[in-house]
Image (cartoon, rainbow, N blue to C red):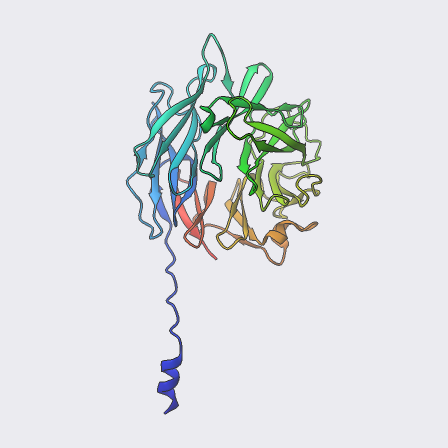
Amino acid sequence: MLLPWLLACTPPTSAPVPTLDPVEVAAAGEAVDAAPWGDGAVISWVVDDGEERLARLALLRPDGTLSNPVDLPAVDPVAGLARRPQLASDGDRVVVVWATGDPRSSTIVFAEASSPEGPFTTTLIATGSATDPITFVDQPDVHLSPDGEAWVGFKAEVDHPVVELRIARENSGWVPTPVTPSGGLVCECCPHTLSFLPSGDAWLVLRGNEANVREIHEARLSVVTPPLPGRDLTLTRTGQVSRTGWWVQGCPFDGPDGLALDDERRLATWVDPTSGASRAWVAHTVDDGATWSDARPAIGDDTRIDQQPTFARHPDGRVALAIDDYWTGTAVVLASADAFLDDGEPVADHPDAEVLRPGRPLWDVALVPFADGLLAVGIDESGGVWAEPLSP
């Protein structure tokens, strides 16, 4: 007669959380991005009908349902969106930035809304004209500071071939502050990443251009309080991350990206072919950038053609690194922070690491936290936009 008593005293087991199937976001699209929104994610993509390019956003809820897409407000009805919109959100609002127009008269546009379902209002942050030519030569990015203020980073070619990296702050009326890290000239059309450290300082990772040698550099910048238009950032320290000697007379678009684990420990990733194969590299610092480790491969497979590495943080604290392979799509290296801070072997070979892949091959992936895991949003081989939760 003990069995009923044992059954009564045994705590019930929770039902497994159902795994969501991949979600088709749009039948056709390109240039995706994504940002967390509560337990869901806001997704953006670009549609091009051959006459104009428009950006759309939609909210993917944790149950897999998708809100009705919202078009971002058109600012230049002739040229349309010239580059990928970049997203950021903090649960209180969604902010987006993009560049539009002809390169010699282009505009950096900022849009915001209190919900992914809009309505969005826009602000012109910077413009060029035929009489005052400013070429915006890379992808602008947007970030929200710990107190919710929007910051936008972009590069402007002010006097060929001189390129300035500028960071514009919402509370300074978008008056940009030029930033000059180490590395000679700023690589004119390579991506850069701006983020914020737990202390509130800004952290910048970018490629330099020293006579076409394009190393990775970083800079830590203290934020001026109260806002001081044109002088909002003070360069605290800047240094070189990579030491590859890679000479290229062009624009490598594959990185860098960075992830701050705390104020002292930071990770950087990028792609270059200096080992003979195009592969994603990872380097780290544990002393606030005073020294950087030697770079090591993220995945030790010489047959891959790696591109577009990006970091994300899993809700359980692990680090995820998404890497496109030109032939097979995106793979995600998921591991503890200690695995990324180790030396020697490729990160994917560490005992704590595992490699995740979407069931449907995806390229150009944006990786964000979603519910209690990660969400991969990208383009499939037919050109459709898909979102797929990754497990574990």
